[in-house]
Length: 220
Image (cartoon, rainbow, N blue to C red):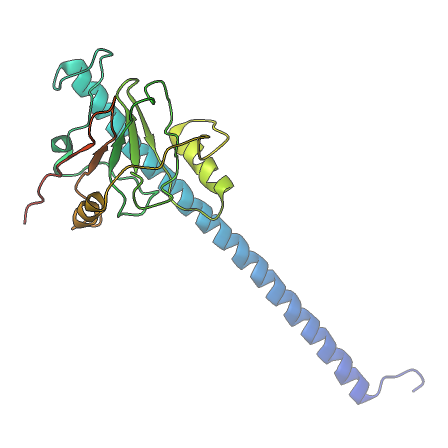
């Protein structure tokens, strides 16, 4: 019959259609898979942010309660000069945004009394603590760990701390003044990776020598 396709050509056309359909299904599956992965990643990030906020709020609440009820010595501005490890002997607040080997908390040093945020907001090295506390203002901040980009890290810091900063590092921020002994103690404190013993780094004030609070012992 005039115009009729030969069996070979008809088979070839059917195969091409089948291949195109298969490629379409593969592309669709890839798109759905990528979307699902993105949604899971976003869900995991939100859960991590919520845990970080909850831990930060717990630390803030403990400071406020102890200062208001006279359970600890306060400075002239009504805030504790430090955070005692004994306050959290069983289950200290943990910052899930940073590696577990980081020191627990840093006390703001001389010249930082008026600051609302630490000069260094990311734990770029193992010497930088997870939390920063300013006893002059009662402010506690949760630092963030390494991220895929500085922009992502800054966004995360602002989300957790309720801030709107433009930079991860303040201009002229000093290098953290911790020692190798501090780091060894920090790593030794992570017997249980879910409940590290607190390690407090006290940065110098007015020329005073740096000191470090002792971490409480974990029951065997």
